[in-house]
Each structure stands twice: as structure tokens, then as C-alpha cells.
Image (cartoon, rainbow, N blue to C red; front, side, top):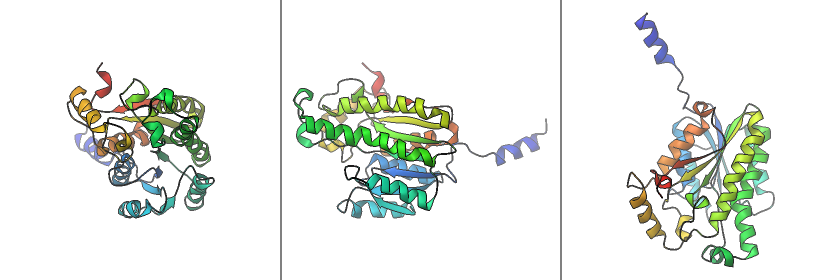
Length: 269
């Protein structure tokens, strides 16, 4: 065996977990504490170019500096509740790049009065709004991304253990996230022949703006810390590293999964 030649070849090997040359779209950054931003930072460090969206003019001052920090060539408004805005984002991506390699969907919403109510007391309008924004918008993302992923790609969304088991005060978002996880499996089956992979990232409790809307959230955090086998909470960089792996060529044989990044929180009864 020629040790010198083998070492040389190893040194020149391409790291399959890198995202150099890949183009991604990140939906859902609200501020520097967002899961979406943790993922975007990891994508950027791995070499990807990113299109970034912000919700509206109120969110823009918080998101714009982060997008500039990531050297994003496309920074676009996107409120999935507004007709045509999501479609306009994909049209801009098509016009600028002509393709996409991965999308991160980190969007969720429920009206406060319905989120704080029991599931049996939530309104029809509140349920429909939560399902549309938090679940159906990911289906719309997949529909719009498919034509831009002629060479395959990866679609990622964000979920939580409350989709699988009852978590106190998670309330309406439990059924909504359960629907999202089921949608992931069906879309993975439908898009698999086109080499488009679909996953849900199930993050442990995190101090994000969206999570702060839950009742007794500090108690949920402490419970998760005590319950997790590793006895610590995860952070947005942990989620970002997993998202980067899944978007990379190293994960080309994986699809349709709920991928947990929660320090083992989900395995303890």
C-alpha cells in the first residue's frame, strides 16, 4: 500500500457534509434567537448561499442585519397569510438562481386566545389559521420548490415532541404539529422519485419568540432539562448542525423522518 498516495487522496476528498455551491431558502427568521437563524448560520458556515425572508415591516429591522451578516443575495418579505407573497418569493428565487437545493420552513402561528385554550375549546377560525400557517404553508412550499429542484433537493420543517405526546400547555399546536409530521411522510413518498427528501426537525424546548407565547414556558424548559438524559437544553446551533447534515449530500439516503435534536428528551417516559 502506498501510504503517501492514500494520504494525498484523503486530503483531497470532498467533505459530503459541506454545502458549497448549494442554494437554499430560509423561511421564518424573526430574530437572532430563532431556530431558523441558527440553521441559517450553520448553512452559511457550510458554504451555502441563502435567500432569507422576513414577515413584514415590523420584523424587517430585526431580520435585515442578520441576512446581511449571512451575505444573503435575496432578502424578501413573506407572510404566508397574504395572498401571493409566498409565490412571489419563489418567483424571485427562480429569476435570480433558476434552482434551489434546499428549503427550511420554520413558520408556526396560532391566535393567542386559541393557543391558551384547551383543544376542545379552540375556535374553528383559530384552528384553521394555525393549521394553514403552521402546516399547509409547508405543503405550499413543497409545491413551489419542486420545479426548482430538478436535480433533487431537501425540504425541512420544524416540529416538537408535543405532536407525539401530550405536553402541558402546548394545546392547539399539538394536533397541528402532528398534521405537519404526517404531511412530511406523505410528501417524502410523493417527492422521493424526484430525489427530493423531506424531514421534520424535532427540537427540544428553546427560548424563541414563538415559544414565549406558551403558558408556563419556563416550567416546560426546566422540565425538559430535568427529563432529558443529558440534563441540558439544546440551542439553535444544535438544530442548525442537524439541518446542515440533512441538507447535505451525506444524508442522501434519508427521507421522511422526524429527526430529534433534544438531548434525548423524547425517549423518556
